[in-house]
Image (cartoon, rainbow over all chains, first blue to last red):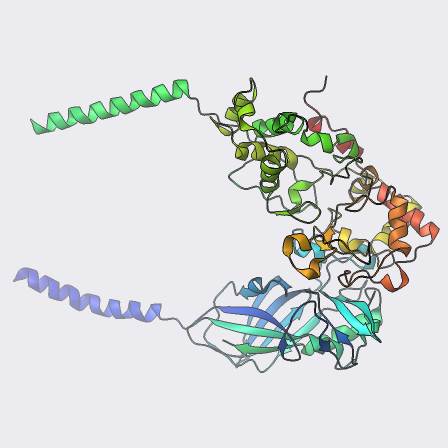
Length: 245
Length: 334
């Protein structure tokens, strides 16, 4: 009888604490993955085939698409910011490796805006910051300002029945940074407990249009061309759209 | 009565097991190889050394001996050093072998990248397929079994231990003391010709850096540089991808003045011929690398003065301490 009494008292005292434990473990925070995907005019990018047409009418292919992205910031409905300040390297050919998971969880809430940098800001664009492959092969020569290529987009195109090469290489030219601030304001990311993936979809065709219509005949040997670097920087601001999974 | 009997049995087991241990220690010593402190030069990429083949003094010493010993050849006629002479920066002009230099940072090997992975993987290929090493020769040799025992605790030598020893030695084959390296360390200034050659190399005028950039002077990637309008298969042989036709691995330009002839087939005897090719002789083919910007003009169109400056810069990549390093030399030399 005494044992029964002790058991009942114990259960009575433990019940509230058990229920409070339950409350503490239910968190609606979650992690977010940023997944980079590549398209041309709505079609999934297929490398090394001259089949895409840009605004100028160039029939072109893509053989290389490599770039840095960095400094991700999510903004919620109240204007609160969640930042991920690392830098990531994307090689569009390595489809399995182009997804990056946030290092920390994101507080529950609705996030309407995502901003990030295509390239590296001045704090990150430092000689020797990425000594290992594949990132080290993005080095931007010291005589041109040093640091790293933000992007290497290369391929071939048909110019009046002559096949030519193009190389859209962007980076800091001397003191002019040229990194691109990407802002997606219709994100509609709802964090309520389960991990989410933000698909960031680059449309390669947008590099050649809006606001500057670019002819691939002029996209060769452009690393020292301040005018083209600026135009690519301007065109790059709307190259990404997003979907949530 | 049960307790004392159990105690007796336990004591007996412990004593027997101690006895076994002692016998093993006496007849079959376990060697603890001495860790080898491999120093990574400033600015070089990280060196990835798998824990299954740590660098040891004994392993490096053994690898060096094997590198110079034709015992690893099935017919006893060739050694690694036979095609990789130290005075030519571990290449050999007569066979146009790729130079052994800073290979610890490679991930792809041979001109077409037939072997990918670690140094151990390419060395295993050399041991098993190139040299077809007869392991019985090594196992019955008068000196090697003890050296393998000390380096790897190997009672029987297999191709794994041979390739691991060679890989350890090759990781020590580091060149980072050229005139260029000393310039980077602030120990000297470049001449005007060298400095102008450097600018040519690292701008799109000469445009060498895209394939021969980084501190290693190679991107370790594959390119069709426009040698032929009908290129050889190259990388295509390995990948079976027609887009890889004519692509070969970019070799390092460190010690380039010591490693003639040039290109995968050794078609150019001198560095002047190579620069003439990039200046005026580049040919179009469907898989030519998009980085070959001036193919429509035959190349980058350098003047004679620019060519001279570029050669002056390339000469700064020569590392004479590497080719005279006694720790890399033939240990059997008298």
